[in-house]
Length: 170
Image 1 (cartoon, helix red, strand yellow):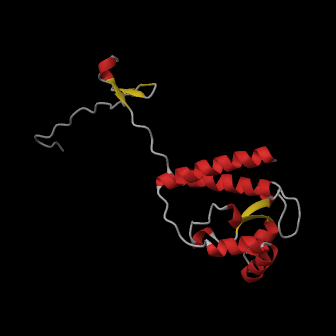
Image 2 (cartoon, one colour):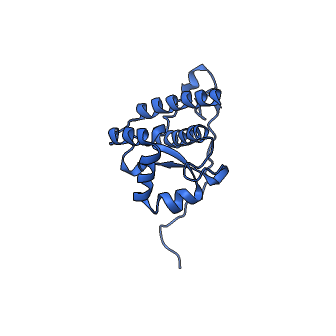
Image 3 (cartoon, one colour):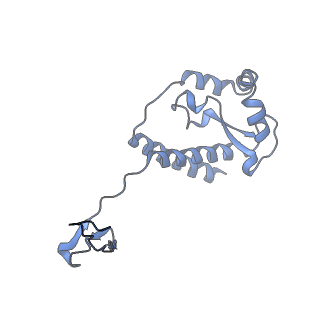
């Protein structure tokens, strides 16, 4: 069956033209590569989630060095995936103390998952007895702080400096 007045246009293949990059400058594919064709490319804005992940890794490495990879509950030397950086006041309770050294301790996998999270009343009583000055500090500084990108960048820089300090002391 033939339709009257209907003609199909031939399909032309679409090809994506590459954009050449030269030292942070971008050339448009239809322009010559002269001085007039170069346009500056804006630097990427750092991602807050990537900065948070880096801060989390830095603070956990700092406390593992501080506690010498020894479980604070049983005294066992831990390493690798058996060495957990555990928060005293959970991150979900507010991020003000999430990256504070006083809020973290090293626990082995068993004591972190089977004891700390399953017996919070007993665990907090143990923490207050073993670390009374840290418990008082945490109670006094508890709260929520809204952080902007600049705050995260400053925190990351402080943690990098602290990490370098701890490595040099070791």
